[in-house]
Length: 308
Ligand SMILES: NC(=O)c1ccc[n+]([C@@H]2O[C@H](COP(=O)([O-])OP(=O)(O)OC[C@H]3O[C@@H](n4cnc5c(N)ncnc54)[C@H](O)[C@@H]3O)[C@@H](O)[C@H]2O)c1
Figure: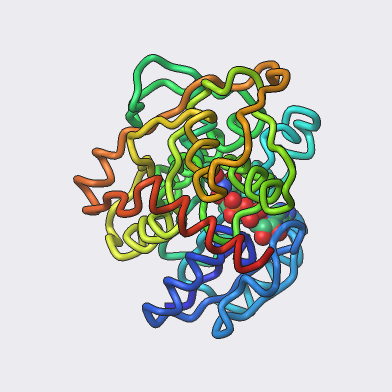
């Protein structure tokens, strides 16, 4: 099939591109290269440089490339930046997505697969691991924007018959990750430790996240395509909560525990907990995480080591 991946030069998008190429699909990556990199893109995939909010240009790409499937990952994905500039965040993450949804109806796209977030959508809740049925109370403009696209997807499905899946990821980590994403702390710590610099944990380090390895996320995206008739919202997480102190210790082991655990000032307003229930995607797609945190950190460490 011919598949357009917005954000295809980014961390997660490029892994999805690799999986799709390996499965015999024709892949076009659409990316403005604001954080993505050309070298991430599979050599068998084509790159088109464009911004999702350049409405005319994007329509031209739909008309010319005639994709059958859209994977939509292009986003302003820095949670803190969204707090500083909600307008910029909404422009890319809501209007950019809406543009793609309108075009998907107009050009009869067969399936629209969206990268949403469970990490930033549900907000703090005692109902953990959190299922998709939980009422969402996002604590950032980024989370609000992702949630509004989830709601638009349902609208486009109900009213225009658009077939979709929205995958709500936990905090995704692994090779090619950059320091700005939801699991950015792993890249920040590794970059510092490889330079021999001391990492500093914000606050007490007890805030928890659900860290899910990027190849598991890419596999969930492939299953969303292969289970063609399925529509809806699915969490993609591990059901395991890890706090920043545990994460620091796990990484520090690869440096022979040479760094002491140092704490700085806490960041105000940061979500305290996050952990996702993955029963629904397990039941409907047969997906489960295969890479545990220990193994995932080891392979992320190896990747950074090869590039230091
Ligand atoms: N990394 C995580 O932990 C995580 C968790 C939940 C959801 N997500 C979502 O997954 C998607 C991919 O995230 P990632 O971690 O791979 O980040 P990333 O920054 O590596 O990927 C985003 C890509 O989109 C491109 N892009 C940004 N703005 C664009 C625009 N206006 N037009 C065209 N391209 C644009 C960037 O250049 C980059 O290649 C995002 O939608 C993000 O919100 C990520």
